[in-house]
Image 1 (cartoon, rainbow, N blue to C red):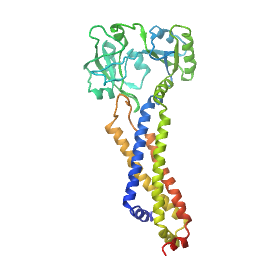
Image 2 (cartoon, helix red, strand yellow; image 1 turned 90 degrees about the vertical axis):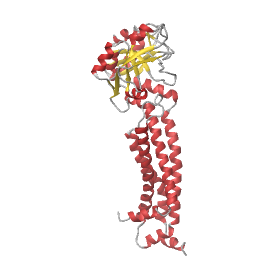
Image 3 (cartoon, rainbow, N blue to C red; image 1 turned 180 degrees about the horizontal axis):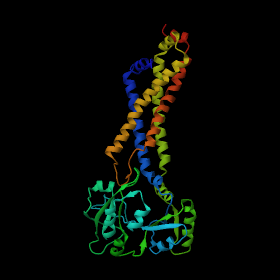
Image 4 (spheres, rainbow, N blue to C red; image 1 turned 60 degrees about the vertical axis):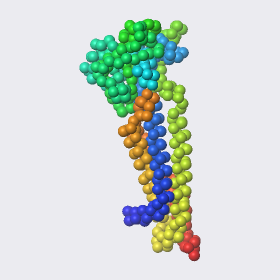
Length: 385
């Protein structure tokens, strides 16, 4: 601690240069925080996917339907605990910009199979008792300012309704997420309401969610389901829920690889900036370092002082950058709730950012620190002559 004043004086020597370096590091870590948030938004579903759940869809494509009668046959397969059907509704609220995930399903088995959706008991009963009832996630409700008891109208370009084509719903429940990363931007309503009102596709569903009795038998049960419907007009593809969600995310691209590439480029640039700053600072203090060594500073102590100075620059610039990213994601929120419904900076990535800040300081300061350590007193003092 007795050398804190010395390190602080060195940092203040070139205030403009130090400030610009701090600003560069701040921006780099702010970008790191935002990119980590976007990556989490695309992959949160994979991490939260139930280990005991499967998705069963048409073998050719998700857009092709399956018979509603498959549900009973799936439920009879050994190892299956329950099955529930979903159909992509593609609902539009007011205008086409208001697009969000909207699906009909069967309320009771749906809520039992997805415990990460928390719905109060009275709202659950209201959903069971209201044919036009629908539940919406907290994020979706906040987006449109909906309230329980409110009637809304939606249009579906997929499922036409007789008359004016509008589907009317009663908001009877608002579900919360059991975990921070739970997607609460969905809209669910009763399948029987869709079945009674649509003019085509009766008796068809989009896909099935299947819960297995033993997660370790998930692959075996998936194979049994596909075998049950092999060579039928509607062959199926059953896969773990996590793999299904990951397949969706990979349609956009390998988010993890893109993230690593962008972050690597940013940090390599910042490493050069910080390294150049430290190297220049050491060169300017050659004589001073010689004097320090002449009065008894050891090579190890000189090495440590330069590394500490470098780490302080990296940490003082990096941690506020991470903090700004956290504040932005927490209080400003998603810039596009429809595409990025889950938008928060995970604690895991904050910890990684802290480690990166320290590592950046060490790597950027290592070469200048070694130069300072190896500096010979006579050569250093001669530069003053």
